[in-house]
Amino acid sequence: MTRNNTLRFHSRVIHAGQTPDRWEGATLPPICQSASHLHPTAENLSQTFGGKTSDHIYMRLTNPTNRVLEEKLTALESGRGAVAMSSGMAAITNACMALLRTGDEFVTGNSLFMSTYVLFANIFKKYGITARLVESTDLAALENAISEKTRFIYLETIGNPKMDVPDLAAAAEIAHRHGLPLLVDNTLATPYLCRPLELGADVVIHSTTKYLSGHGDATGGVVIDSGAFPWAGNDRFPDFKPFIDRKGPLAFLDKVWREHHINFGTTQAPLHSYLTMVGLDTLALRMERHLANAQQVAAYLQSRSEVAWINYPGLLDNPSHAVADRQFGGLGFGGVLAFGLADQAACFRFINSLQMVYHLANLGDCKTLVIHPYSSQYLSFDEPTRQALAISADLVRLSVGIEAVEDICADLGQALDSI
Ligand SMILES: *Cc1c(COP(=O)(O)O)cnc(C)c1O
Picture 1 (cartoon, helix red, strand yellow):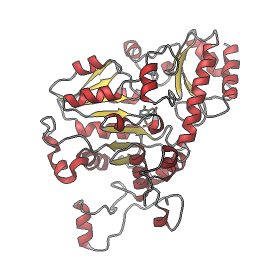
Picture 2: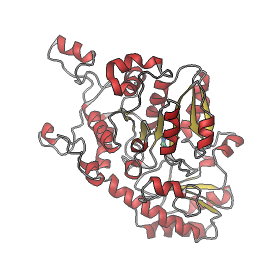
Picture 3: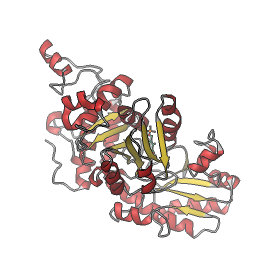
Picture 4: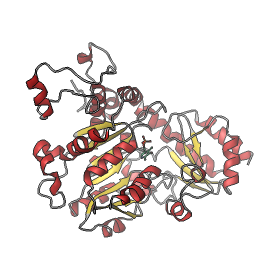
């Protein structure tokens, strides 16, 4: 039984996809640690391979624990189906590869997660695929970059570390006018803050490694399909025919799963799905605190003379403030912010002086995390690319955790005192 249709988000995040009656009353799904599954008859296995049952065959294809997570995330994002994968990058790679052939193009905002940028700008290029990068919030540029070779539009709900927030409903409208699907990486917003499919997007992708699991203990990714994009009869997608014949509205998800996920072997480990679900139970509560803390930390940093600039959509003078306020229903503006100190040396002194805040490469953890992207994730990038991605040497990125905000500000404050 899925008790999910009438519940509010705070309740749905806990109860969606839960079927304790099927698990001998267990309130958490069992970790089904089995590489393959028994079949009662030869006829049954043949039918399962033919897609006529949803029985499990082999862990690389599907797994019962992963399926519970898929059902939960489908419900939370108002989708129609999902595939859980081993990482956010696995989800992005499989979703895009399912749509791309040699010679194709796609249009993407230029405010991209670091590995997504590498995949789009460097790796796809090796296969003759062109990513047309435009300013994420410039809708006219987005539309102008569309050609007859375009296969999709790709955006992130909140850019990182640019903190820009594109208008997803308007972008979906442009995409649909040209017969294209809109894919959205919703990792930084989470379905608590924004549900892109409800705004007209066609596919949502998450790195579940971040807020959804929330405790820095699991990696994972997911592709969620709205089931609403009309693939049939669309001249841009002649290669979708067998998937439409097989799965109708879920043709895209079937292509992602059948053609890429199971053959690339981007399997999610059931333990990671389990940990992600334990984390999900507190997503709404954690997000409330992340959002409130980030807003207060931004205000605190504004009061400090050592801070040259702050980029956070929650600040009134931020270029993305109005769109974010409307799109996120006034709930908040995300838990990540970027700010500038005098130079790289000041950033290093600041980071080295922090006592409670963790210095590491991650975000969306319940702990407050800091990093200097220019000298770490973007170390090997050339200067023009760093500039295009807004990665400056004076930039510090902070993922605000759920500790007492007074303690976060006190730690930031004493580290600013010592630069
Ligand atoms: C972390 C992240 C990813 C990649 O996810 P992994 O789980 O690390 O592979 C993709 N997009 C965004 C926005 C992220 O923050």
